[in-house]
Image (cartoon, rainbow, N blue to C red; front, top):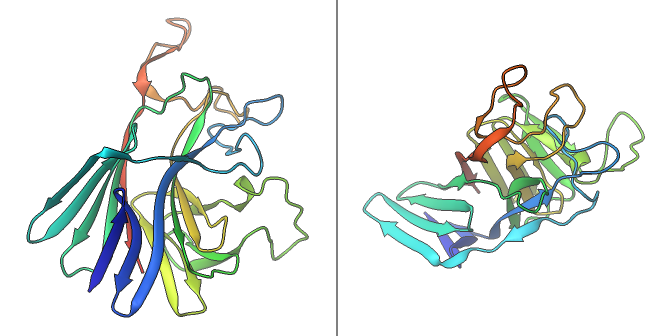
Length: 247
């Protein structure tokens, strides 16, 4: 039987049978690179600083709400423009995190790349695993390539890999932490015991890789030339998704 503990509306510990795992769930973002060289955009993920720390969003305590019936318990919490519902099902050995990322704020003229991160006490030894297009898992070692001498310039972006179905870390076979996704996302384990997945992006510069515009999706858009200027209308695109957490 699984038990989940919370702190300020966020998962803080998961217990199943004799296994106790500290798991701190967080929401945050990287700011996008916007300079005189390779910008972050539709094809390129590049944080403003190569070793930038994730900017953590704090949960709003007054937004916490608990809904419970015989089948499921839901814990609702808001982070301003991110909303989360943790669902714990009776008799199930997993936890679902349903999220909505609303209009990503760009009033500061800074692009943002939104991340859901889990930090645990698993000793993952710089190793994590991502699925190969929904089939077998590929072993990934942070800041390392098996087939050539790797010189690292982007320790965050250079350690992101495609995650089509799942990403996991493990501790010498004793414990593991897995996150299943409902769509293809970028993911990594930038520190031992952690898993992060990028769920949404909004950038303000074209990355020069062929699209010809910034990754700034909005509710609507004016027609392009010769009928209009192609300017964006309304708030940024809102998305909803879920992650399934398994230990």
